Amino acid sequence: MKTVIIASNNAHKADEIRNALNFEGWEFKTLREAGLESDPEETGTTFVDNARIKAQAVHALCGSAVLADDSGLMVDALDGAPGVYSARYASVDGKDSSDAANNEKLLCELGSVADSERTARFVCSLVFIDEDGTETLAEGTVEGKIGRSRVGENGFGYDPLFMPDVFGGVKTMAQVTQDEKALVSHRGNALRALRKKLLGE
Figure 1 (tube, rainbow, N blue to C red):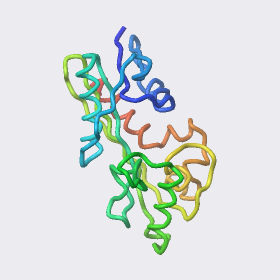
Figure 2 (figure 1 turned 120 degrees about the vertical axis):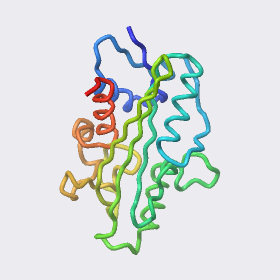
Figure 3 (figure 1 turned 90 degrees about the vertical axis):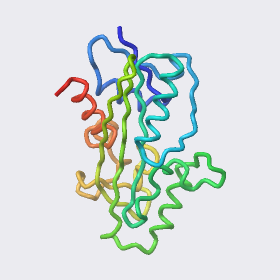
């Protein structure tokens, strides 16, 4: 059995990874399930940088195969912000801020921006480090636009504001089921890309 440590304790993320990378003989464990603690400072300037920081920190702890991701929202009218600061966009102390606070700040920043210019994308970068230290990278995106108010009860983060083009730009990520989201999401796209690379396709 090959054990892969997910550099996270997010249960939804872990389920999505297990479903996408359901290789025979592989098992995925969150940090908590593996009895590990790791919370390195994410000092990278790109999503790949931060995913690599997390993956390398866990790999150094246990020597097992590790999968880490970093993701966020990039808004064109804000020159790519919030970007790598997506989780702490509204923070005043450098720590993660609440989804509500981040969403409210984004709405304020885009208050005078026309609907046609509210284009954005979610980006997910994955870094897989095998037992021998071999590194495999994959990235996924989903294009869309930012709405003018939060809509929907599902999802998390900026999902209630983000309307993917694939849904016709009229439905937010928070208005669809987890399964529907996984089919089009940035993390789902990144995982499908990683799966192909690991299979050598």
